[in-house]
Length: 439
Image (cartoon, rainbow, N blue to C red; front, side, top):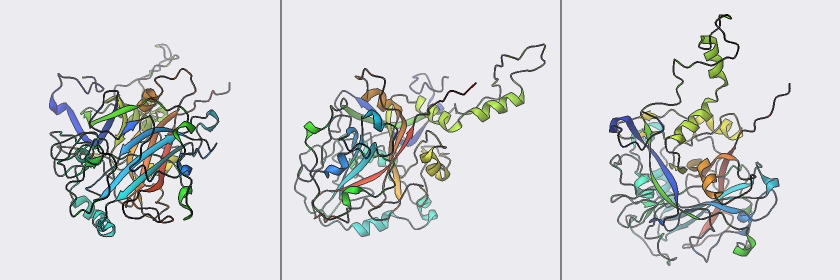
């Protein structure tokens, strides 16, 4: 069986395994999620509280950027009473390509009155590794995406891109779920901004799918003082947007075969190998040379995406990103903290251990940042489908790390019912540039 043919109807169920990663797919057909989108213009949690203008600008040329991704990021199982929205933007100026600060991510949060943030946070931050491993994983996928897969259970995270009758899907409506799906339409996502209402329970909060990406170790510039910030620029001041896509989602399924493993029978053809020379391309030395030149990290990345090639993003709050490269700055930062996945009967677990994400801590509150979402190269193909030039985006993946406490800005006073905005960490892994070797 072709390991990349994950949709084969003739395959036995035992040949596939489902992971905790929610995959997002671009769609021109409207989905239940009315908030999450790829491309287009951004929308806000509340039009009365837009983000500051400083978050709209490229850090290289200071021009306004274009939206890559917007996600409904409500995670009621982790942050009860929090409405969250995530945005990732990129500069389209040629001179800014491949430069730090040309892709930025930020988060908007509004907390319902009466929600005790500190008490909630203590419950969500286990003190020991054993406590984390012993605690059941919330079904974030179903909550965020509303996915109702047979593999979903109370002990595994739900798919933020799918919908479910028991948990809400970030991409689908789930008014009866206990957690909201950042990609699905929820009671909060499908209605116009509502006045904050006191709440005594979190069961009515919709689940949402949240994602952000950006590599930035410097503190967010927008919140260095309590001075009133410049309002978000008018839509006319931005470049023409990328085409708008709705987002749909489902859990990642993988073939039981591992395409990343090099078969024992693999051989390397050598133009100098001849019967007379007495050499063979299948020799042990040749195979070792082949393996040493193979970028195993990239091969794993490519093989994993090839099993679900239409995915534009990967979501797993508190999970681990799929690295494009382990030798670039982002790879060197995150690779030491990657753990091997373990396969269970229901899911492939890839959950990281708190305190070991490798990402810079939140500049606002000092809490460890956690992985939430990453964009894949297919997102470029969708966003640039109408482009005619060759000078497009050239990243391999964009990884978003968010504050583990979903904190509110400290440098500006945010009243109850208002929205606070903070820049988050985005790790960009650029495509490899192959340089010609001198003769």
